[in-house]
Image (spheres, rainbow, N blue to C red):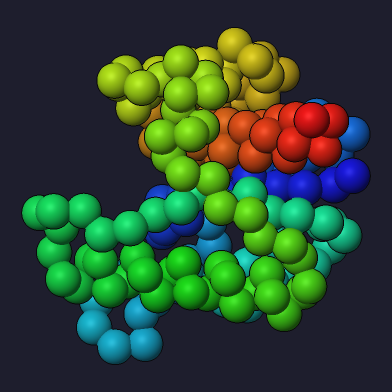
Length: 160
C-alpha cells in the first residue's frame, strides 16, 4: 500500500511510503499569498504531487492554535490545513489525523528537542541523509515519523 505522512504548514513536508518503506520526500509546496505578504500552501502544487502516487491514506499531523501565536499566522496555518484536507478529499485519499503527542510518544520524543526528530529520522533512513541533513529539514523528519506512526497504529488496530 502506498501512503504518506504530512507535516502541515508552509515549512512542512510530505513523506511518501511504498511497501512500508520511505520512497520520496517533498517540501510542502507554497505560493505567494493572494493578499498581503508571505507564502501559503499551494493547492495546485499539493494536488500535482499527490495525484501521481495512487495513495490510499494520508496521515496528517493533528494541529491546533497555540497560545502566543499571531492571528495572521494562525489564519494562514489553518488555511493551509484546509487546503490539505480539500486536496485529499478531491483525490479521494483517506485522511487520518495523528496527534503530535501520539507520534512523539511512539518514537520517545516527548520532552525532547525539535531537532531530535531529524536525528532519529536520519538513523532510521540513512539513505536519505541528503534530504535530512540540515536543521531546516525538520518538516521532512516530522512527516516521515507521522507517516510511520500512523501506519503502525493502523496495522496494530487491524491485527488487534
